[in-house]
Image (cartoon, rainbow, N blue to C red; front, side, top):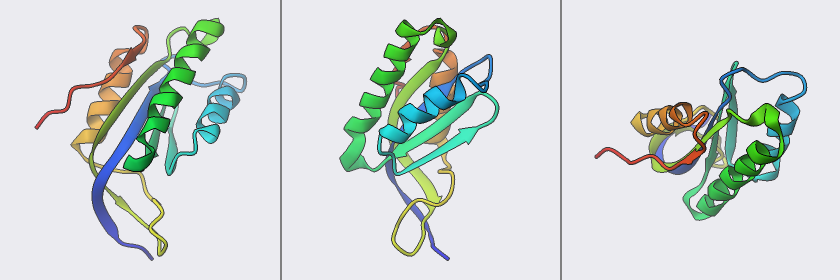
Length: 130
């Protein structure tokens, strides 16, 4: 069993207000898998939280760019929201330090709210609250 740690992570939240279906879920999952995230969790029925270690934060921006491309290319995703944010969160790790639980903390809420807010407006980087 691992331990609970508090560290900075780069996070991407996705919000798809109409909910994922058998035809839309695999496309988004494929983009997430190819991003090389340290942790990703589907938040049924409309969202994803994808986490990257700080040294891989550029992958978060790349994932958001790919989601934006998907929005432009496929009308089924016209309303998908994506937000990126880096902040201090708490999560459980395994023996090797891999993330094994959904990160928790105010910064997770920041990125999730930002994704929901821009679900039809495009990409947004939320402002951190001190």
